[in-house]
Amino acid sequence: MSDVIKLLTMISALFFSSPAFLVSDAWAQSKTRLWNLKLGTPVSSLSKEEFVNPACGMNGGPPSIKLDSFSDFQKCKPEIETQLREVWFIYDDEWEYIARANRDEHEIARYSANSFYSHPIITSLLLDKDSLIQGYRMITDPRAPNDIRIKAHTLAMYFKNLFSQARWHCLDEPQGEREAAIEGLFVKKTCSYSDNDQLYRVYESYRLKPGQELDDNKVDLKQVEGQFESTASLEVFRLDAVKDAPCCAVNAHQ
Image (cartoon, rainbow, N blue to C red):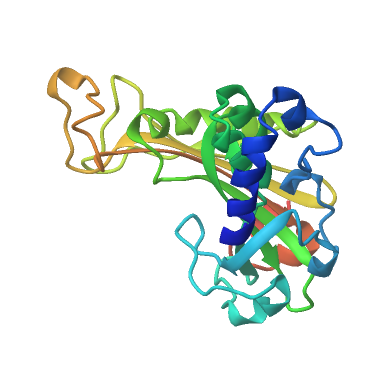
């Protein structure tokens, strides 16, 4: 959302501060989300009011090259693993901003655009050379405060629950050299599922980074900045688009 719009929404919030204004159906922000999209459709079909601020994505990292629109996606290099181009974006956050201007915690939670179950997330689309949406990603944001980030790995369960029909096959990765559990729990796991059209993959990690230790094996969130990893990610691909790509060839041909 532009700075001008943000200023206008703050001014509006001063005059329309009642909860009734914020929850009115006429003013409610769209709830269109990644999992509502039909893969294989042109990126031009996206609502420019709902999916905003596109940039080249970094697979969970910060955005790189800023794009004027999704149609500029060719400026992003194809990924080696997927052979697709990743375009980072955010959901429009206008109504969240109004709620924040009103300091209404309930409405902030209701209209929080770029979070999933109260966790900040990084969202992106994966496009082929013909500008078709062939996949998407949701990844917990590693920049979240420690008290939120420590629980980020639990979103893996909620990612899976988006697809109630899925029969997940999960693979636990071995504990790496000098990696350690956090208070007795170590998780490094990838779960996947494919149907006739799409491949779904959820990754979950909860562990101390190599060489890190906790006093008495207890987490002190004020002292563990950068020492632990707690993350979850969801990737969904259209099978025809990734069937020969390094990321997914094995799953696609099963």
